[in-house]
Length: 207
Image 1 (cartoon, rainbow, N blue to C red):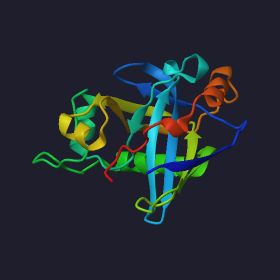
Image 2: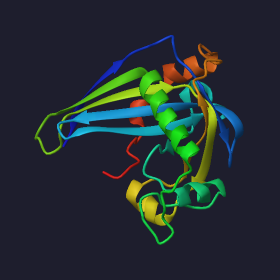
Image 3: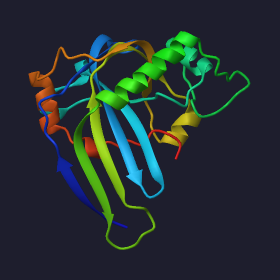
Image 4: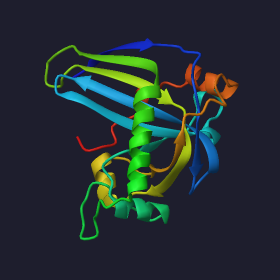
């Protein structure tokens, strides 16, 4: 089965960067959160990735990591802070969701920022050409600037089999606020000009 891709680029001058604490690899850094909102006749899903500013090179080169705002337990969050491998999707006898109240407030606030302040940069429409086995999709790609702390860790093999992704993931920690320091920077402008975010295999959750 093949698709026709109708990619609509929406250039914007009001683009922001994110500042985060990149624990395991980068130290303190600026980053970009990329949100993929996927709509079809089955409903709407959202997926998130994070791009550290220090990983952005010339001609749109960058490194990105799956960012999870849901689907993780307190034990996975604590293990990730210790740079231990985690599986967000498999429950064990140690699984618990007893987050501290202030951390739950941090998560709610971060989700609010993502919902309210993300800037759309790209829309992808997927249409069928031969059959209707897979529903048509509209994928809206947005970016968000934020200051805050994130923790990074590797995943267990059991999670890698589910997501088909082998690398580090990111979990939010706290102290979030929208950042505007690098709005209009040359590095960010070049990234948006050269990078094709529609080519990222954005699905990083249970389907």
